[in-house]
Each structure stands twice: as C-alpha cells, then as structure tokens.
Image 1 (tube, each protein chain N blue to C red):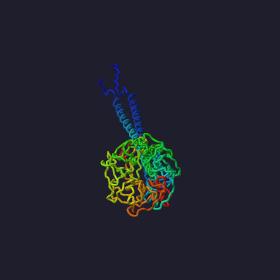
Image 2 (image 1 turned 90 degrees about the vertical axis):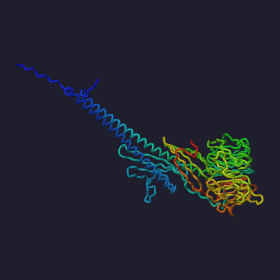
Image 3 (image 1 turned 180 degrees about the vertical axis):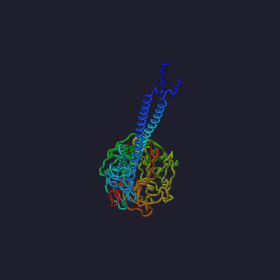
Image 4 (image 1 turned 30 degrees about the vertical axis):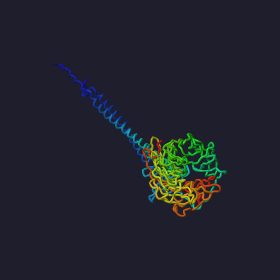
Amino acid sequence: MHLNPRSRPGFVFLLSVLAVGVIAAATAASLLLLGGAAEHTAYSVEQSMQALEFARSCVERGILEARNDMAYGGQEYYSWPRGSCLILPIGFNANAENVFCAEGRSGLALRRLEVEVTQLFPQVKVRSWNEVKTFTNCPTT
Amino acid sequence: MLFAPPPRRLPLTAAHRRGGFLLVEVMMGIALFAMFLMSAGLVLMNGQEGTEMAGDRVRATFLSERSLEATRDLRGVNFSSLTDGQHGVLLGASGKWEFAGSETDALDGYKTNVQISTPALNVRRIVAQTKWKHGIGRSGSLVLTSELADWRSTCAIGDWANLTEEWRYAPGGNPTLKDIAVVEDRAYVVSGVAPALHILNLSTHATSTYDYGGLTATAVVAKGRRLYLLTSDVNAELRVLSVENLSSPSPLNPVVNVNIAGTPTSLAIKGNTLYVGLTNSANPEILSFNISNSGAVTPLKQGQLAPQAGFDVKGIAVAGTGAFLALSDGGMELGITDTTHANLNPNSIHNLTAWGGDQPSQSVAVSGSGLLIGCQKNAATSQSPAWYSEIVNGAVTTFLRHLGSGSITGVSLDPHGKYAFLAAVSGRKALQVVSIANFTGAGELKSFNATSPAVGQDVLYDPVRDRLYLVTSRDVIILRPGGASTRPCT
C-alpha cells in the first residue's frame, strides 16, 4: 500500500520527533556511558596507584627485614583493608646481591616491582628499582 | 425563479476536518519532544557529573600520591622526622617538602593530609587522605596507603682491634661444635656429637638443644625459617628443619640422600638454590638443589671441576653468578664455577702458588666485592696463609696474602671491607682479626684464645648486631667490638 505523506499530515512531524528523540537518546546514553567510563577510569587509576604503593611497601619491608635477619628468605604477605602485597622468596647472600620482587594488589589492579640490591651493609645500595610486567629474576607465583 | 437553490456547501478540506487533531498532535509532539529533551538533559547532566566526579577523583588520587612522595622524600632526609600523627605536607620556602599543620589546602578546594602511625619497629604507615567539596553532590574523599621503612640508615661497625667477650655458651663435655647459622635472634650451632643442634637465644642468652634422632651434623645454613643440615646419616645426609617456632625445630620431609660417592661437606645458599660441596668424590664435586618450594629439596645440577682429579670442596661462597670453592688441594686452592651453566662448569681454577702459596684451602667467604680464603697450616713453616681478593665482574683480581696461625677452617668478612676474621684449629689465636687495608703486612689487629682444650672451628660476623660468633670445639663465644654495645644501624 502506498502511503502519501500528504494524506497523513502528522506523519512527517512524528517521524521528525522520533528521529530527533532517538538521536537525543543516543547522545544522552553515550554521555551517560562516557561519564560511567570516566568514573571507572578514575577508580582504576586510584586502584593502580594503590597497588603500586602496596608493592613499594613490600619492598620497603623486605629490605628492612633482610637487614634485620641474616637468614631472611622473603615469601611474606602483608594485607591492608584495600589490598595486599606479596614479597617473593629471596636469598640473603652474605651481603652480596639480592633481588626483591614484590607485587601489590588493590581491587583488580596488580603492579610488580623488581629491585636489585647490591649490598645491604653498611648502607643499602640499590642497583635498579623497576616496575615490571613479569618477574625475570624471581620465580613467578 | 423565486427560490434560488440553497448554496451548495463547500466540501470540508482535510485541515478543516482534522483541525482539533492537529492541535492535539502539536501539543503531544511538543510534550513528547520536551520529555525527550528533559530526559536527554538529565542524562547529559548526569553523564557530565560523572565525568566531573571522575576528574575530581583522579585529581585527588594524584594529590594523595604527591603527599606520599613528599613523605618519602622527607624519609630520605631523616626517618625520625616521620612522627606519628596527622600532618599537612607542603613545599617550603627552601624548595623542599616539609610538614606544616595538620592539613594542606590546595587552591582548587582540595584538602590533603597524611596520617602517620608505627605498625612495627622502624616502619611507618602513611595514609594520605584527600577531601574535596565542589557544591552539592560533588564532594568526596580518597585515601592512599603506603609504608616506609628505615632501611636507608648507615650501619656502623665498631673497633674490632679491641674486642670484648660478651657472652659464652659452654654446654660442657666435648660437643665438637662445627658450624653456626643465625635466624632472627637465634643462633643454631651444629655438633659432631648428639644432640645435633644447640640453640642460642642471642637476646636473652637462653639456650636449648635439639636431638635429631641421635644424628650429628657438620654444616648448617639457613634461609627464611628453614635450616639445611649435613648430618651423619649416610643414607640421608641432607636434612631440613623448620624453625617456624624458633625455639623448637621440627624436621621436614623429604630428607635427601645426596646419593653420590663422597662426603657432603660444605653448604651455601644463593636465592633459591642450595649448593653442596663434596669431599672424597672424583665426580661430581659440587651439587645444587632447588629449595624454592618451602621445605622441598629438588636436585638441580651436578658439577665436576676437573675430570682428571677429584677436588675436595671444603667451603662454598656464592656471589653473583659465581660459586667460589675452597679446594683442599695444594696445587689448586680456589675454583670458581658458573652457577648458570648446565653442568656448573668451572670458569677458572686458581693455583695460588703464583702468589706464594701452596696450602690447601679450608674455608671461603664473600662479602660485597671481597673474597677471603683460609688455608691449612704449613707444617714446615707453621704459618697459615689467608688470601684476600676483590671480585670484579665475577672474577678474582690480585690476591693479597696474610700469614696467620693454625689451620684456618672458618673465615668471615665484615661488609664495610675493614676486617677479616679467621678461625683457626688451635687454642692459641683461635680467632684472628686482620685489617684488610694492611692485609699483607702486620695486619693482625687482635687475636683471641680459646679455652684449652677447645680449638677454633668457625667464625661468623653478624652485621645486624655488629657481633662476632666464634665457634670452638667446646663453646660458642659472642664477641663485641671495643666500646660498642648498641645496635649498629641507627
């Protein structure tokens, strides 16, 4: 059946309203989603930063413990209300090289640090302090 | 025509017919459109608000992170400046971070503070909180937590040219004490007669023993809360003890039968690898085990230093990728193996005769870039050479020789590179303290005699406490440097 718009006077207007409405709704939904995504990103940034801080905390604790205990072996777990960190096994080695590997978690964020220490006494000497994707000098968990 | 026909009614147009409907349609359209606009506007505002709130959160995250970094910077200057309580952090006039007040106001409505607490000795917990309020519905707070430890301090070393006996553990009889390892504040000393293990509390000086089913032991190393012992059980020489409870060791299974012709004699740990040196074995002379799995000991590699002769490996020290072996062979006193090689192949075997030595090595130690070797006494000259060398890129450089007394079965280095400590199998000068700066000359700074009939066996320098543990055949003597009596790391 052929519909002549002239015979349906409200048709054009209705279509226009619907079209504009759909576009407006799509725009609004997009903005809503963008806002939600921005919020999600903000939380991710926060969690990621927090995970890195937890990893740093583990390295700090690990180096301190290695200076307090001649047989310190790492493999320790610390937790806080908003996350945790794990320091992987190390071998205290007569004031020679030690590698401290630590991973911090907060929410879904995971950050890893690998820190090479060339001596613990009389003063700690750090050769490198790197964030890594995967550990290369420590066994993976 | 009196009557004109009535005028004919013109037919109504569509517009005339639907005039009311058009108005309704317009009204409905406007209403509908207004509803769309309103909802779209609301959603738009909501989306924008979400974006703005996200921006607030990101900004607060970076402000909190900046506060943590500032606190970390302050720690670098002086750890004791991190006092418990709430602080504001700001950049001072001198361009350095400093604590000021209890809160820092950013210009754009954010307020940040750091709360410092002490969860453990020499550890500070830093909670950086940022709060913001931008009108109705745009307020919030965010917290980042971190911990800082006091590991940047420099540990002092006392004057070891003037040592003092601090405490002596003498269990009585002839326990034939051999070797020592320290875990936290406990020293574990292995004995050539049962009970195999003597446990010394270095803080309270309380002591106890652990009888390992009548076994005896000759060597011990520690990693974490695990002790690795070489015992007298020829079918299971290598044993692992858990010291989760520091005062009550408990055996872990499986025990390991090294299962190699020869006698396991020396132990060393680097990372997750345990090295065992063998004597009376032509091949292999060194073994390695994976100890990454807590309590488990898995064979890794076997190494042979030289196919033509079986060296006795009396001592092992590991630094970098090299294992430095004290070889009981007058012709070849030092072996260096590549621990990364599949067969622990030797990088080099050194004959110290070129430097004026010909005595078999008995012990070896590394600390930082220093290598120290103790040798057997020369019967003809009654002198015992000790050798010191720097390690550069995994290789030894020039050897310095010190002529000590008695067969040097134990050596230790202080990490400051000032002193070498030698334990000799003799009562007189059971301990000799030698200046590394004057190693070849009259380097002996101080000696310490064992109480007859005890003879020196091993020595261990403890950089954590700046103490020296001298193990003789009959007792353990804890020595401190002249004057020093406090913890050296400040």
